[in-house]
Image (cartoon, rainbow, N blue to C red):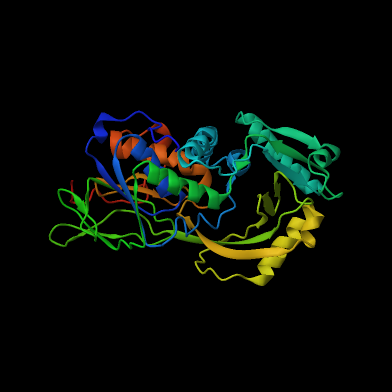
Length: 394
């Protein structure tokens, strides 16, 4: 059986501490694992009967610390969070695999960024320059060098980049292994339990009558529970309303003609897994339906085939739509809310997989040790709230 020893030092402050995590996506599960490793007694609730049934299971599993944030000059805090998350992901992946006794397809192949036109060559040069300015590894590649790495690339490709620290996982496997790791590590998984109301007082009480010292909200794009005081008065958490961003994805049959690396184009990406090759994704802000638009799926295939022609004829396995949890400024909400003892781990938009281990660290630092790191300060959940603390203290 895999070892169940904590991977982090047990905090003296966690002795007797009971924490409820509301939400069983990768953010909630990762936070639960980290807090349990520090010695807290942790229970995870989710209204669904499966782990990560929201945005996590519908994601491509890309860990694009360099590609996503190299050129975002106005998002330096997010870039720093992404870089830190990318650096700790290998240890996190190893920890989950050891505890669960199975792999998560953590790929170290790196990611390619490809260009077909002069305008796209300029675009990748901007990415390369930004990576170099931020100390992110990057390698410029000629069309011939790209072809040697990925023979299936289109003859129209004129050049590109290799981002060696951008990696990927299989989202479904991550969820399975996290669930196994948590169960073996003593974390309670209470699935099919919708938490609509939590009563605050000396302790927080969930609808099943259990009591906790802390609550961590990791509901993704789902609704937050209502908080009330012992006499039923509403308690304001100060969190903004989630901004839904619909995304659609195409899954094509795996095969010898499919690439090995994640491939980024100017408009879309290709993410090969052992069981299929994903092509994505749309970004439809303000939409929260999960209906698949066949025209949008056809356009994903068309765009992917511009980089890898074999995608044009590959068998479609399935397609789907999901809703990413956004925020007004597209940065996550991580930390204590206006209700002392209630912590947010929300709003990770399209980078929940990447940010998961870093968010888990930040949440555990605050919920268990009462520490707010400089990295965490930029993601204060109350940065949109003009009010003060709610009239509640555990």
